[in-house]
Image (cartoon, rainbow, N blue to C red):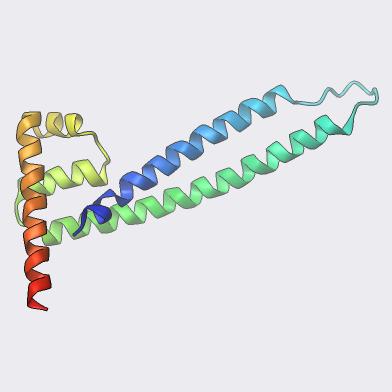
Length: 141
């Protein structure tokens, strides 16, 4: 299990937050551009801008739905992999909280009821072991 694999869910979460922020901005823009229906002739430019924003909102919502489905699957697979490959329960808990639930180190330590310093030591221990295992596997091949 590599650091890149572990960080996959965190990266997807970041994409989702960015897309949600963009959607919020588009919705605010659309609210400010609602054409006035007063029966008087108006420029088609405002109507066209509203249509473009509406299409962008629909497209972003579709992307967001797809990303949410992808992250659910990725988190499930990552949790299974952690539970299968990591033998120590405390490390399993750390990895699931940090990389599956995407919590900060501080929040992970709080939930595990350990000090932040101890959490960093455990985290470092895990990655040292992974690096050693990876090195041994490469030297055998």
